[in-house]
Amino acid sequence: MLGFRIPKAGKKDRNPYSEEQIRVLLKNLQKYRYGLVIRLLAITGARAGEILGLCEDAVNFQNNSITIRRTMNLQTGRLKEEPKTSNSYRTITLDDETMEQLRFFIENRKKERKVSQLQKEKSLIFLTQKGNPVRYSTIQKTWKSVLKKSKLDFIRIHDIRHSVITLLLTRGNSVIEVASLVGQDVNTTTSKYAHLVRKGNAVRY
Image 1 (tube, rainbow, N blue to C red):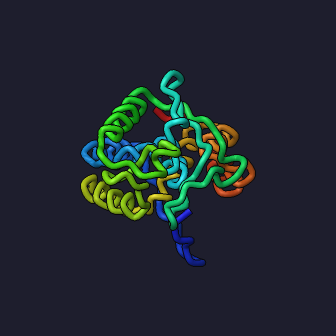
Image 2: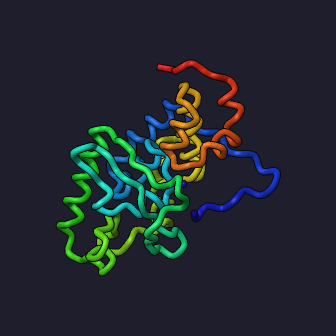
Image 3: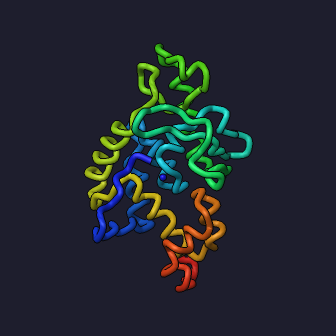
């Protein structure tokens, strides 16, 4: 990203967002409490459970990076100590603006009154105002609201991962680079996106 519904046989995949559409999406996230969750999904191609499962020890402000080492079960809201697969464990370098938003979010969260036992033990980043893990359904509501505000065609949250992979491959990034970023097996990426890999498109600016 697992919490998303598997399309029925014969159902067409939704078209991925373009770079311009993703820019519009990012621009409209700032006023939402959990907009940062969606921002991270849109710039990393990570799974939703991986972002919701981020703890403070996963953030390195000196190196501008996050490390995916846990995942949140989207059905139960429980934190799992291991990501989906061995390929899922990875470190991702982020831009300055995203890191600043992470710092701001963490500082504000610490000022809020109630803290759950899970937060005390794991320093989970994304919590409700009552100190509980953010439910996936809450992110889905935010997602729908942002898409409406951005006047974008509806796609599922998980489809933003597809958009990121498609965009990077179209830009000319190697399959190995893209698979490493999104925590996917190289063979899986090659199989799913062979039509893009074969094209060998030049980088777009």
